[in-house]
Image (cartoon, rainbow, N blue to C red; front, side, top):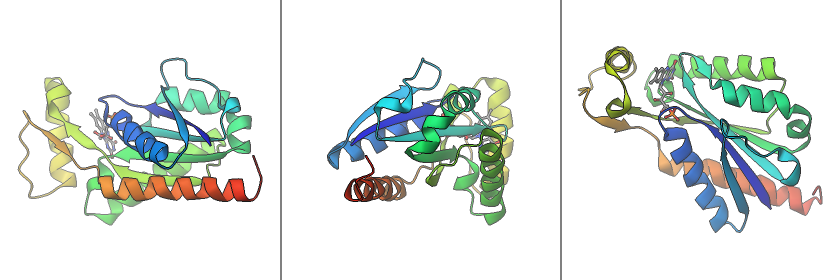
Length: 186
Ligand SMILES: Cc1cc2nc3c(=O)[nH]c(=O)nc-3n(C[C@H](O)[C@H](O)[C@H](O)COP(=O)(O)O)c2cc1C
């Protein structure tokens, strides 16, 4: 199956996750094409399935992802699709933080009218080495709230993405593609 993977990222974590998912799908015998939402990504028409991923910044998904979905809505809603959401809140042990991400996602999908078959929530990273001073201070405050008791060094990076979980999520998507094939929908 041909899978298109579109990602929206600021510091690169969503791209890293997209590449990890792409490798798993290749191992599963699919072909993949990865594209950054800001770099004229291809339309979904030539693909059997589409995965779209975005990080959350300031309670919002990336605008390039919103535009891509808007421009390709009809085609996306006709295909097998999955949305992967990358955030710091999903690294929190506090379930209320997870609920917030789910609310942001619900509102985002309602506004865009996109109905993905799968939604995968993933924890991202804190990449202080890529932030300017103001961002470092802001993210340190947020990190202290999200991960109480943890030492935060504003000159280090912290990766919270759970690669085992992401592997399982990607395999779940791959299985749904096999089911699609079995039922002859492509
Ligand atoms: C300026 C800024 C704002 C952020 N806002 C949020 C937020 O509102 N909610 C959240 O859960 N994570 C937030 N994050 C954390 C990002 O989602 C996390 O760092 C993610 O790994 C970024 O992925 P990317 O490198 O693909 O953009 C924020 C990060 C930055 C730098």
